[in-house]
Image (tube, rainbow, N blue to C red):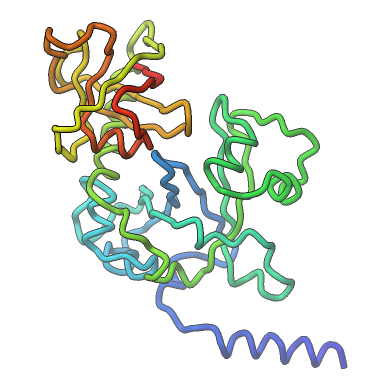
Length: 279
């Protein structure tokens, strides 16, 4: 009798499950890697093959093709390499934090996050994923809250049906892709450096500058250099490009001048503030 009841439950689940060609993206055993980009952006690393296009991937995740292409700077072909992954922006509301019930687990992909050097469980739970500390500890059966670089954490689950359009928010502007591009340039820039400069510096917001580019003026760095800046108040990170040196009439205490837009992305309200700088 119990077996018959269970079988009927499974039939009911399959009946209400929407039909979607996007189900062919993955096998039933696939898990996905989630990464934290900058200024509170989360993304999935979606593995692709030669049968995938921007159009069908975008449809699966509730995006337009244009949005997806802009989010992945440089990938504009109709077909994608079968050796690469593509970044998919994911709203936190699309992450299921409660483990799926037995019999329904096949409807979801687990999402795993790989810990970076220096990250703490408190930082990840409160500032990156907006989840309780206890939920991540329980989900991963952690005996110690100390994290190690490369450690995998189960962050939650995402529906195999993708992400509804209503959950994808209008934050997928060009600056997201620009920041990712600048991050790659920064990583190449520091790769062969014997020493990386790291310090806290005073920064001035130029309110009359209405540029919506991720740029700055620096005291001495050459044009085209990339600086990693972090707001210590909220841990937001941006990678900004130096487009010139600070004019002599500004106070010498300022290490950077940034447009109002950059300050806004960093969550800064004051005209003068401090950032952690790396270059």
